[in-house]
Length: 197
Length: 220
Image (tube, rainbow over all chains, first blue to last red; front, side):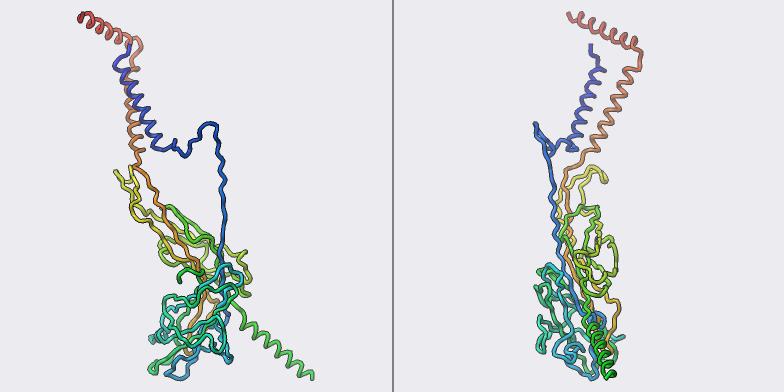
């Protein structure tokens, strides 16, 4: 004969069973994705393919170590040439090369880190200009001047491996400028063609 | 005649040295394998890059990260490193850049961080920017009147998209609590039931049976 205690025991066991089922279901142990029915078997093989992009930029070591030099003896000076603009020849010594060991085309970008500074004195960046070209002659890069800014801007795009980009730089100095050695930094950057500077 | 030859020899040597010193070219190269990755919040993601130098002179490379990637950068395998001359892209130096992604998406929780659900109703968070490998000049010389130091950099873009994992309210803790309570109650109940000797339990059972029989008789 079943007593009241027996019914309570059976009820508790039933509740416990339901709760355990609920907990298991909560963990999604029997999710449909893991079900295999009948005699079916599965086998998975992962496919992996690595694609690398690479490019290198080169510049002459004299530009890397000496930078862009202006030797200005007389002011005011308007669009005074950097010393390597012509350097006694018809060609500029400022150039960037996309190394032949590159598998993407490159866009060139240029900026300056700030004004030219000598102590408390400055030469505004508006006085600092450049021109660029993929050819190098007395007329190219031309004197079609662009002002250098503190944000990267494109100079030329879609330069292929082994190709060269040439630059010329000019600086204007007003008559009121105090004498001194004015310096800043010009940064050249290469990005894969199509990406922003 | 001999003197002339010596002068010519010296002149040729000087010209060769001058030619080499002018034409030595510095280079910095970057190799990358991804421009976008999906990452989990509260995790660390490391990405490998290659640095190479196809020029004839050793260079010092500085690694920089730009954009919002700076918020999650957790370290690079080096800051500045000398890359040997004539290192081809196939033999590039490995640079491991790691990002530590914080908890981004707030969950709707009942109690503290328990019994939570994630509806992913906010916009997907992405960190973007670029990895720059800059050739830092080993030495620098600036002109006497005015001039600019020059650096070159090669860059690769990168965007990290933080996945939001949608899930319903996690009731596990509630299930576990109720199961524990039921088990405790069951143990208490069984203990109470079986703590008496069997003869006593059977006597009580018999007594209850007699009372039931009596009630049935009275009904008739």
